[in-house]
Length: 442
Ligand code: GLY
Ligand code: MN
Ligand code: MN
Image (cartoon, rainbow, N blue to C red; front, side):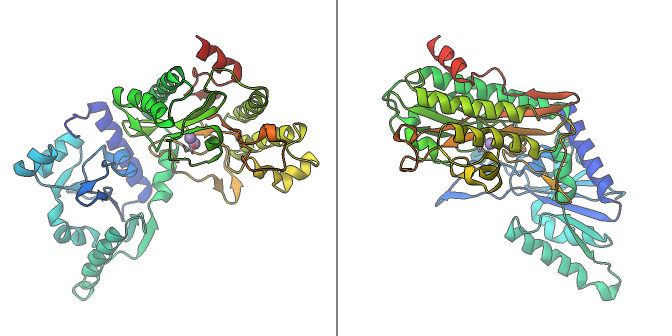
């Protein structure tokens, strides 16, 4: 919405997803999905609004103060939306609203009601349904509202009302659907990836010694906005030892000649995230030590990517990356001991403290279980995840030779599993030390 009309193909996709979800939930269920709440940033000023990913996935509706309710098998309509009423005065300030009259056509839902009437209507929808699917504990204010509506039905038991008696985690059904991306979703993810690749290229091209990290960030985010996208998460631009701070946020230091700059940034396009990391020398040439560590991370990256195909356990990529990194840490003299021990007891975590990736989609750290019955789940076509090995030598670590200290490197790509292997959505962006030097020299 928000002035954009949703194409018919997208409406059909939302309808299909709602139907599939309702089929899985069963005829005696009701599913309740509130819009994301608005959040105050400062006094009467709000953070840019971002709709809840589940609501986006099932409706594309981008307005706040809304609730999507799915009632499988209900004869007067299964997909219901509660939303804000039209209000010319408010709309003059905040922009257009669909309103309950416009929502069915605009969104393909069966019926829509004013959000102000939800207290009157929702108890009646709960009545007679035995199971409620909902994300308990995500939004405490809404949890309390739901309990209030349930209590309204419970109060009518003497008059024959049948309140729901099973409460189930909505994510159990929905997260599994969202984990497998459709062709339409992959198209949007390719677009998010492409914008992100162009943004990283713009940043790398603009980088000069003496620039502030935020100046580099500006080059990158200019490309996001100019492409109708925005950052999927806070862009990380860390020069020198700042690259060792995994969630570095300040982005205000000077990038000096000889520094590596670690850039972890991705665009969100129509709700879908990309997540890319590159580490490059601000002067265009890697030092010997920087290159040695960058090559090592590159080898780990390749090892993880070699595990990206259907039927392989999700954790195999991480294990492969850890083996390569740990072996490299030993051969470069960063660690001492036997490889098996360094891997088994986790000593390698001193320089590689995180995992090699995560699902990505509508959320940058997307939904979906990583393990099933205690076992790593197997990769399937349509799953999309990041591969992001790294190595971080803290500047004050006197256990290693001084030449290594303060070097932080990570490379990150987004990978879709296909029927016979994988597709690197973020391919085309220089990644190896050679590719980066060639790109920066061009
Ligand atoms: N940018 C967050 C991550 O790489 O997981
Ligand atoms: Mn990531
Ligand atoms: Mn990242």
